[in-house]
Image 1 (cartoon, rainbow, N blue to C red):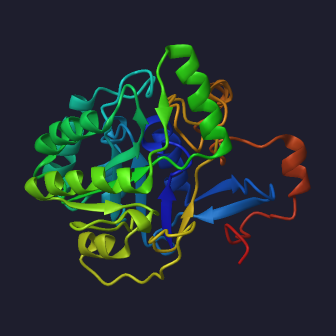
Image 2 (image 1 turned 90 degrees about the vertical axis):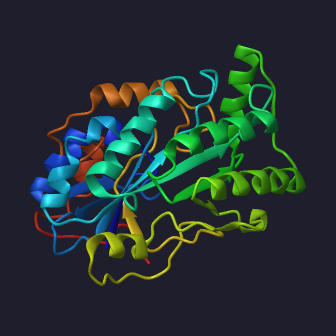
Length: 314
Protein backbone atom coordinates (compact mmCIF):
# COMPACT_ATOMS: atom_id res chain seq x y z
CA UNK A 1 0.00 0.00 0.00
CA UNK A 2 1.20 3.53 -0.83
CA UNK A 3 1.23 5.79 2.24
CA UNK A 4 0.32 9.45 1.83
CA UNK A 5 1.96 11.76 4.38
CA UNK A 6 -0.11 13.85 4.08
CA UNK A 7 -2.62 15.89 2.10
CA UNK A 8 -4.37 16.66 5.41
CA UNK A 9 -1.36 18.36 7.01
CA UNK A 10 2.32 19.11 6.38
CA UNK A 11 4.11 16.20 8.05
CA UNK A 12 7.60 16.90 6.58
CA UNK A 13 7.59 20.50 7.85
CA UNK A 14 6.02 20.10 11.28
CA UNK A 15 5.84 16.42 12.23
CA UNK A 16 8.97 14.81 10.80
CA UNK A 17 10.27 13.53 14.14
CA UNK A 18 6.92 11.87 14.83
CA UNK A 19 6.93 10.24 11.41
CA UNK A 20 10.42 8.81 11.86
CA UNK A 21 9.52 7.37 15.27
CA UNK A 22 6.46 5.71 13.76
CA UNK A 23 8.54 4.41 10.86
CA UNK A 24 10.90 2.85 13.38
CA UNK A 25 7.98 1.32 15.27
CA UNK A 26 6.47 -0.04 12.05
CA UNK A 27 3.01 1.42 12.54
CA UNK A 28 1.00 4.48 13.50
CA UNK A 29 -2.56 5.04 14.65
CA UNK A 30 -5.04 7.50 13.24
CA UNK A 31 -8.66 8.50 13.56
CA UNK A 32 -11.20 8.29 10.74
CA UNK A 33 -12.37 11.93 10.47
CA UNK A 34 -15.89 10.82 9.57
CA UNK A 35 -16.75 7.83 11.76
CA UNK A 36 -14.16 8.58 14.48
CA UNK A 37 -12.95 4.99 14.50
CA UNK A 38 -9.32 4.44 15.42
CA UNK A 39 -7.15 2.54 12.94
CA UNK A 40 -3.70 1.03 13.12
CA UNK A 41 -1.77 1.57 9.89
CA UNK A 42 1.24 -0.60 9.13
CA UNK A 43 4.43 1.22 8.17
CA UNK A 44 6.78 -1.76 7.92
CA UNK A 45 8.70 -2.38 4.70
CA UNK A 46 6.69 -5.47 3.77
CA UNK A 47 3.40 -3.53 3.95
CA UNK A 48 4.39 -0.22 2.34
CA UNK A 49 4.80 0.16 -1.42
CA UNK A 50 6.26 3.65 -1.00
CA UNK A 51 5.60 7.08 0.45
CA UNK A 52 4.24 10.30 -1.01
CA UNK A 53 5.25 13.29 1.11
CA UNK A 54 3.22 16.50 0.71
CA UNK A 55 4.87 19.69 1.92
CA UNK A 56 5.43 23.42 1.51
CA UNK A 57 8.83 23.23 3.13
CA UNK A 58 10.81 20.03 2.73
CA UNK A 59 13.92 21.56 4.36
CA UNK A 60 13.26 20.29 7.94
CA UNK A 61 12.75 16.78 6.55
CA UNK A 62 15.93 16.63 4.47
CA UNK A 63 17.84 15.18 7.41
CA UNK A 64 15.41 12.24 7.55
CA UNK A 65 15.18 11.35 3.86
CA UNK A 66 18.44 9.34 3.75
CA UNK A 67 17.13 7.07 6.50
CA UNK A 68 13.81 6.60 4.68
CA UNK A 69 15.77 5.59 1.60
CA UNK A 70 18.20 3.38 3.53
CA UNK A 71 15.24 1.50 5.03
CA UNK A 72 14.34 0.56 1.45
CA UNK A 73 11.29 2.79 0.92
CA UNK A 74 10.89 4.60 -2.41
CA UNK A 75 9.37 8.04 -1.98
CA UNK A 76 8.06 11.02 -3.96
CA UNK A 77 7.89 14.57 -2.62
CA UNK A 78 4.97 16.75 -3.69
CA UNK A 79 6.33 20.22 -2.85
CA UNK A 80 4.10 23.28 -3.11
CA UNK A 81 5.86 26.51 -4.04
CA UNK A 82 3.39 29.33 -4.71
CA UNK A 83 5.36 32.47 -3.76
CA UNK A 84 2.13 34.16 -2.71
CA UNK A 85 1.75 37.35 -0.66
CA UNK A 86 1.62 36.91 3.12
CA UNK A 87 -2.06 37.82 3.11
CA UNK A 88 -2.71 34.43 1.47
CA UNK A 89 0.09 32.36 3.00
CA UNK A 90 0.79 33.63 6.50
CA UNK A 91 3.75 31.48 7.53
CA UNK A 92 5.07 29.66 4.45
CA UNK A 93 8.83 29.60 3.98
CA UNK A 94 10.46 31.97 1.47
CA UNK A 95 10.17 30.66 -2.10
CA UNK A 96 13.89 30.93 -2.84
CA UNK A 97 14.64 28.70 0.13
CA UNK A 98 12.06 26.20 -1.12
CA UNK A 99 13.74 26.22 -4.52
CA UNK A 100 17.11 25.53 -2.90
CA UNK A 101 15.61 22.61 -0.97
CA UNK A 102 14.17 21.20 -4.21
CA UNK A 103 17.58 21.44 -5.82
CA UNK A 104 19.08 19.60 -2.84
CA UNK A 105 16.55 16.79 -3.32
CA UNK A 106 17.52 16.56 -6.99
CA UNK A 107 21.22 16.44 -6.19
CA UNK A 108 20.79 13.77 -3.51
CA UNK A 109 17.95 11.63 -4.83
CA UNK A 110 17.39 12.54 -8.50
CA UNK A 111 15.03 14.81 -10.43
CA UNK A 112 12.22 12.21 -10.53
CA UNK A 113 11.89 12.38 -6.74
CA UNK A 114 10.24 15.80 -6.52
CA UNK A 115 7.06 17.12 -8.14
CA UNK A 116 6.40 20.86 -7.96
CA UNK A 117 2.86 21.96 -7.05
CA UNK A 118 1.63 25.43 -8.02
CA UNK A 119 -1.46 24.87 -5.99
CA UNK A 120 -3.95 26.22 -5.12
CA UNK A 121 -4.37 28.94 -7.78
CA UNK A 122 -6.21 31.86 -6.17
CA UNK A 123 -7.70 34.64 -8.28
CA UNK A 124 -7.61 37.84 -6.22
CA UNK A 125 -6.77 41.51 -6.40
CA UNK A 126 -3.35 40.47 -5.02
CA UNK A 127 -2.92 37.58 -7.47
CA UNK A 128 -4.65 38.38 -10.80
CA UNK A 129 -3.87 36.32 -13.94
CA UNK A 130 -0.84 38.46 -14.89
CA UNK A 131 0.61 37.87 -11.43
CA UNK A 132 0.29 34.10 -11.87
CA UNK A 133 1.97 34.17 -15.28
CA UNK A 134 5.01 36.12 -14.05
CA UNK A 135 5.15 34.31 -10.70
CA UNK A 136 4.92 30.87 -12.33
CA UNK A 137 7.65 31.86 -14.77
CA UNK A 138 9.93 32.98 -11.91
CA UNK A 139 9.55 29.69 -10.05
CA UNK A 140 9.71 27.47 -13.13
CA UNK A 141 12.94 29.08 -14.32
CA UNK A 142 14.58 28.26 -10.99
CA UNK A 143 13.23 24.71 -10.79
CA UNK A 144 14.27 23.72 -14.31
CA UNK A 145 16.19 20.47 -14.02
CA UNK A 146 14.99 19.85 -10.45
CA UNK A 147 11.66 18.32 -11.51
CA UNK A 148 9.89 17.19 -14.66
CA UNK A 149 6.30 17.89 -13.56
CA UNK A 150 4.25 20.73 -12.11
CA UNK A 151 0.77 20.05 -10.71
CA UNK A 152 -1.81 22.84 -10.69
CA UNK A 153 -5.39 23.28 -9.57
CA UNK A 154 -7.81 26.08 -8.87
CA UNK A 155 -9.38 26.49 -5.45
CA UNK A 156 -12.26 24.18 -4.61
CA UNK A 157 -14.47 26.69 -2.81
CA UNK A 158 -15.95 24.63 0.01
CA UNK A 159 -17.98 26.39 2.71
CA UNK A 160 -15.04 26.56 5.11
CA UNK A 161 -12.74 27.76 2.30
CA UNK A 162 -15.13 30.55 1.40
CA UNK A 163 -15.52 31.51 5.03
CA UNK A 164 -11.76 31.73 5.56
CA UNK A 165 -11.15 33.64 2.32
CA UNK A 166 -13.98 36.07 3.07
CA UNK A 167 -12.64 36.72 6.57
CA UNK A 168 -9.09 37.25 5.34
CA UNK A 169 -10.13 39.53 2.48
CA UNK A 170 -12.20 41.69 4.82
CA UNK A 171 -9.44 41.86 7.41
CA UNK A 172 -6.60 42.53 4.97
CA UNK A 173 -8.38 44.54 2.31
CA UNK A 174 -8.21 42.41 -0.83
CA UNK A 175 -10.87 40.92 -3.09
CA UNK A 176 -11.10 37.39 -4.43
CA UNK A 177 -13.30 35.51 -6.90
CA UNK A 178 -13.81 32.11 -8.47
CA UNK A 179 -13.13 32.60 -12.21
CA UNK A 180 -15.18 31.06 -14.99
CA UNK A 181 -14.07 27.83 -16.64
CA UNK A 182 -13.00 29.75 -19.74
CA UNK A 183 -10.88 32.13 -17.65
CA UNK A 184 -9.25 29.22 -15.87
CA UNK A 185 -8.50 27.41 -19.12
CA UNK A 186 -7.01 30.57 -20.64
CA UNK A 187 -4.58 30.91 -17.72
CA UNK A 188 -3.66 27.23 -17.77
CA UNK A 189 -2.86 27.45 -21.49
CA UNK A 190 -0.28 30.12 -20.70
CA UNK A 191 1.14 28.14 -17.77
CA UNK A 192 1.40 24.97 -19.88
CA UNK A 193 3.59 26.82 -22.38
CA UNK A 194 5.85 28.16 -19.64
CA UNK A 195 6.15 24.72 -18.06
CA UNK A 196 7.13 23.20 -21.42
CA UNK A 197 9.77 25.89 -21.93
CA UNK A 198 11.35 24.78 -18.66
CA UNK A 199 11.17 21.06 -19.45
CA UNK A 200 8.18 20.26 -17.27
CA UNK A 201 4.84 18.61 -17.91
CA UNK A 202 1.92 20.62 -16.53
CA UNK A 203 -0.73 18.39 -14.99
CA UNK A 204 -4.13 19.33 -13.56
CA UNK A 205 -5.27 17.88 -10.23
CA UNK A 206 -8.87 16.60 -10.01
CA UNK A 207 -10.27 19.15 -12.51
CA UNK A 208 -10.40 17.34 -15.83
CA UNK A 209 -12.67 19.92 -17.42
CA UNK A 210 -9.73 22.35 -17.21
CA UNK A 211 -7.21 20.22 -19.08
CA UNK A 212 -5.95 22.19 -22.07
CA UNK A 213 -3.52 21.49 -24.92
CA UNK A 214 -0.12 20.85 -23.42
CA UNK A 215 -1.54 19.73 -20.06
CA UNK A 216 -2.42 16.28 -18.71
CA UNK A 217 -4.36 14.62 -15.91
CA UNK A 218 -2.41 14.64 -12.63
CA UNK A 219 -1.63 11.45 -10.73
CA UNK A 220 -0.30 12.94 -7.51
CA UNK A 221 -0.02 9.46 -5.98
CA UNK A 222 1.69 7.74 -8.89
CA UNK A 223 2.86 4.15 -8.65
CA UNK A 224 4.78 4.51 -11.93
CA UNK A 225 6.95 7.33 -10.58
CA UNK A 226 7.57 5.33 -7.40
CA UNK A 227 8.36 2.29 -9.53
CA UNK A 228 10.94 4.20 -11.55
CA UNK A 229 12.59 5.41 -8.37
CA UNK A 230 12.52 1.95 -6.79
CA UNK A 231 13.92 0.27 -9.88
CA UNK A 232 11.50 -2.61 -9.51
CA UNK A 233 7.90 -3.49 -10.35
CA UNK A 234 5.33 -2.16 -7.89
CA UNK A 235 1.64 -3.00 -7.82
CA UNK A 236 -1.25 -0.70 -7.13
CA UNK A 237 -4.64 0.16 -8.56
CA UNK A 238 -6.21 3.42 -9.66
CA UNK A 239 -8.48 4.63 -6.89
CA UNK A 240 -8.87 8.39 -6.55
CA UNK A 241 -9.98 10.11 -3.38
CA UNK A 242 -12.61 12.32 -5.05
CA UNK A 243 -14.27 13.01 -8.40
CA UNK A 244 -11.75 13.39 -11.25
CA UNK A 245 -8.85 12.28 -9.01
CA UNK A 246 -6.35 10.28 -11.06
CA UNK A 247 -4.36 8.90 -8.11
CA UNK A 248 -3.45 5.35 -7.30
CA UNK A 249 -4.77 3.84 -4.08
CA UNK A 250 -3.15 5.12 -0.91
CA UNK A 251 -3.66 5.49 2.84
CA UNK A 252 -3.29 8.94 4.33
CA UNK A 253 -1.89 9.16 7.87
CA UNK A 254 -2.48 12.87 8.52
CA UNK A 255 -5.06 14.69 10.62
CA UNK A 256 -7.20 17.67 9.67
CA UNK A 257 -6.79 20.98 11.52
CA UNK A 258 -3.16 20.36 12.48
CA UNK A 259 -1.21 22.45 9.92
CA UNK A 260 0.05 25.82 11.25
CA UNK A 261 1.04 27.31 7.87
CA UNK A 262 -2.01 29.61 7.86
CA UNK A 263 -2.90 29.48 4.16
CA UNK A 264 -6.32 31.14 3.95
CA UNK A 265 -7.42 28.96 1.02
CA UNK A 266 -6.63 25.63 2.72
CA UNK A 267 -9.38 22.98 2.64
CA UNK A 268 -7.72 20.93 5.40
CA UNK A 269 -7.82 23.62 8.09
CA UNK A 270 -11.18 24.91 9.19
CA UNK A 271 -9.84 26.90 12.13
CA UNK A 272 -6.23 28.10 12.26
CA UNK A 273 -6.33 28.74 16.00
CA UNK A 274 -7.36 25.12 16.49
CA UNK A 275 -4.53 23.99 14.20
CA UNK A 276 -2.00 26.02 16.19
CA UNK A 277 -3.30 24.60 19.47
CA UNK A 278 -3.12 21.04 18.17
CA UNK A 279 0.41 21.63 16.92
CA UNK A 280 1.34 22.90 20.39
CA UNK A 281 -0.16 19.80 22.02
CA UNK A 282 1.48 17.37 19.58
CA UNK A 283 3.74 14.74 21.16
CA UNK A 284 6.37 13.21 18.84
CA UNK A 285 6.43 10.03 20.93
CA UNK A 286 2.69 9.41 20.50
CA UNK A 287 1.28 6.67 18.30
CA UNK A 288 -1.11 9.33 16.90
CA UNK A 289 -0.20 12.51 15.08
CA UNK A 290 -2.87 14.12 17.23
CA UNK A 291 -4.21 12.03 20.05
CA UNK A 292 -7.97 11.53 20.40
CA UNK A 293 -9.56 11.93 23.80
CA UNK A 294 -9.32 9.15 26.36
CA UNK A 295 -13.06 8.54 25.90
CA UNK A 296 -12.62 8.09 22.16
CA UNK A 297 -9.77 5.66 22.69
CA UNK A 298 -11.83 3.68 25.20
CA UNK A 299 -14.70 3.48 22.72
CA UNK A 300 -12.28 1.91 20.24
CA UNK A 301 -10.76 -0.53 22.70
CA UNK A 302 -11.52 -3.45 20.38
CA UNK A 303 -8.39 -2.48 18.45
CA UNK A 304 -6.03 -4.76 20.33
CA UNK A 305 -2.23 -4.62 20.00
CA UNK A 306 -1.21 -6.30 16.79
CA UNK A 307 -4.64 -6.03 15.19
CA UNK A 308 -4.63 -3.97 12.02
CA UNK A 309 -7.75 -2.64 10.34
CA UNK A 310 -8.11 -1.00 6.92
CA UNK A 311 -7.97 2.77 7.00
CA UNK A 312 -11.44 3.12 5.54
CA UNK A 313 -14.08 0.46 5.15
CA UNK A 314 -14.72 -0.43 1.52
